[in-house]
Figure (cartoon, rainbow, N blue to C red):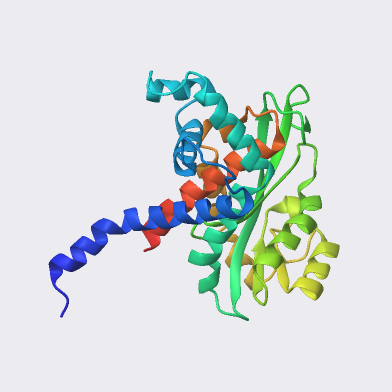
Length: 283
């Protein structure tokens, strides 16, 4: 019989162990894609901590120096910024998130099982970005970037894709489902969206080629969607909550990064932070 104190110790140490495992996955991706060829003064883990701080608490890279005072060179923040740009161009944070997702989430799904997922997109107002920006239909005076999400009812994001602000939602399905099917091989997927994803051609193509069943609410001039579709539509609020959780970070809700790769990296760092919280709750 396991002692009660032992179980309590395991529960208390669980968050630290999970965080350490997630950090180790990111560090391993960095080690493979961007190995240090010479002796460095600061570790990759220290750079990661400062980059996460930029997402959660700070607005300017110079503000990192408030944390260190006079203990580090006054140009240290530039080193962190250059390191972040280098890692972003190598796609390190995207790759790390996919590995974390595979280890803790997708590997638990057995083959030939059916998974219920939800798709939606949101518009991000652009402040400094120069790539994938366009004037949206809602406000012709502001340039926006569109982010598409695919998540389950536990608010775990399986795919995130970025498009120009004038991209119609139905035109994002092909790209999103290609990424989704690559990470969810040999699994059947029920994908539910809003009326912006209505397309009979896409629905037939996805069903025939990718084993993805696309569901959406009816328009007034359409036939009844049937009982199966209605069952999925009742849970579609979860994707709205997922987007809201992601946009609680200022750097996500308002695009301040000129480069698309750095904005995308911050998006994946935010997804990683949210995923860790969900895993702690699910565990």
